[in-house]
Image (cartoon, rainbow, N blue to C red; front, side, top):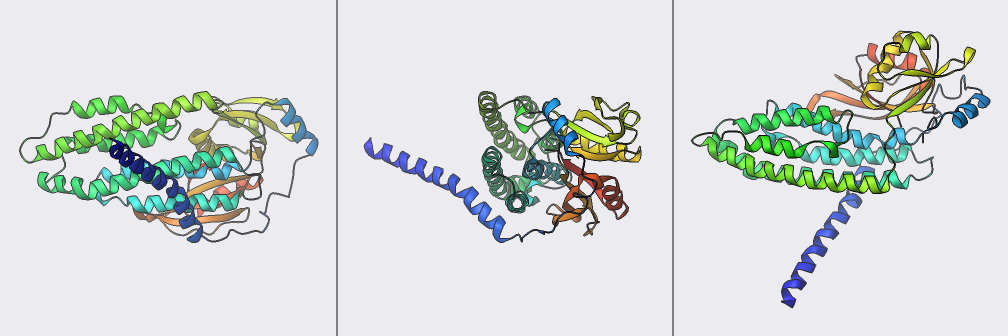
Length: 374
């Protein structure tokens, strides 16, 4: 009995040690495979700086106006996982899951994390953000490593036996697309894995050789949905006990025809009129805000501060390498692992140059993917 307990303890210790090594090894890989960032001042930040008296007034009179500026970079690795889910969904819609480059997305996460650590190094160390990124990076690594090994052994075998995709494959591709869209506005741990598991099991299994693939998908991914459901419940409980609710709005100071420009934008309203100095409006965060910014620029808006800050990170998608215009600095550029024809470029932008930088990037073939709004 003692030997059995001792073996269990040793196995448990080995698992804990392996999990602890993942972020250390991941960050080491990220740091060693990425280079230093430019240390020159970002053009567009010092120029036309707003009056300190107005900044102080806004920070004191509008709760939540000023957000930690380092969050614009430190939020990016979370979104990198969202993009990995989106690119996985696109891939499996027409390809076998076994051909997805899981390990490339593991490596990319740790490279992205290393880059944003460098970008935010001038700010005080944000313990809460780094703990969260370490946890989700470790989880992302484990999930993708397990799925890669499984899909390239058992999964590949059942696909060969079946000879063609089965209905369960199509169902999982649809769920993957739904999950990717869900993540644009809502945290992953709120996704309804329980109903997706039920939907998977309700599918009539294929006949003949395809039945092998049907039952393998049901068993493996039914278990996967169950594990995610339990893990999500743990995360939700932990966040409810230890964190304040996420702020769902962002405060934006702009000049120009602000009232007319935001008219009709859902959930958006003027918060403070500053007369000749413009106005502050409040609007939903995340992807809704990203999609709104180009519309507001086209209506004559000029941004002064977003979340009380004058620098913001953005990513662009394009068909090749892009040249950063004045008012921006390059953080990274790489072809998507699952679709090398498309490039993702990360940039730090001067908030007061958004009205020139974003149109220039679009003219050169870029498509705005996301603005990381603290």
